[in-house]
Length: 477
Image (spheres, rainbow, N blue to C red):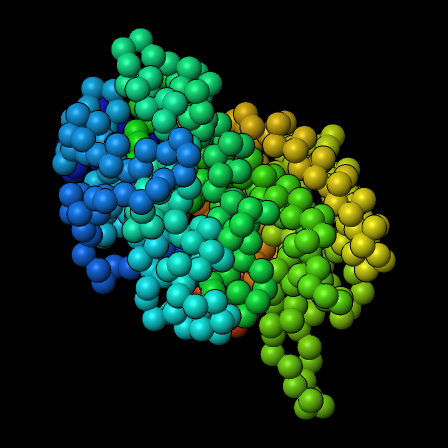
């Protein structure tokens, strides 16, 4: 059975079997210690506290945001609050998954509670912002829009949109998804829409409390990294079965990946162009730049050799802090396969942007605008990639063009996640079997292990591990 697609009315055991590929991917990340997943869990997970019962978790609502109805409006046993997935159209146990204390799928429900933990309180103390559970700089993301009370964390409406105008229509006989969207429901089946919502907190936005600037990172907040398909998998509480495909779009993992990369780059460049966010006095806002270019070992010993390998994707002099280009690297590899006519322009504009940062802010903004246009064009062009292209994209991620660009930790983390996501897409399409995936899993795990510790990251070791994994997948064609 394809990843995440199963018949309605299945038991919990059958659901577990249906998402085996997804959970294997998440488990591999966790076991390898890949920080991007650890970050997701550290930001939201508070496993130590038991989940409050529905009757107490959603009682006595405060003044909700205009148009919001709160999680309680979704919690009835005839709606999304059942114990088992017995619905004829949708599961109907979505709230149980959202509250799951044993799984990353329950992370959004724990988003506010984590702010009461010692780590969050220590971060708040360093920032001097008072109680993190009420500080706007924290609750902007740790309390979702539409929450009736902060303890709901990121509830239904935080992602699906305030429901007052579509709550009744979305369960009405004869209703349609298009009608619900017209009434204000967010079209999360569209990759670009989903990415935009996720990126608000998993990268940042210009909204209040939704930009994790460098000072927040310096205070101890985990580094933010984003991959749309992986994060969708972590929070999955829906079935993409035949009925789902009749009502909505069911984009492949590969489509989610490539659109997510384009949208992440578009968001980064858009925020960089915002003068309010991009400058901190005489300093630029360092959040936009490559962490390891500064956070690396230094020494005054005569025998010390700095670790600053040449990166062919950047036209920047040594000693310059480069813009974080993990999404540029991924998109360039994808474009060479799926949009070769756009690829050369995208690569040229990427290099020009890096160079412009060393010239002046006006030059950088002009270059950023061109690169944003390229990213959007690639999102449109690559949104329907097929099996043959997916195999080629996996190969491109470790070939002689892309591999030399893995000089920094963040891009390497994106690359190994990409290989795993694209392999998952091939499994979904029936192009590779689960037995094949199981045989290849150890080589992918070794690539994950090469990104286990950012302080011990070795570009050459990573490239070797990644190439071994991509070669193994290529052998399945």
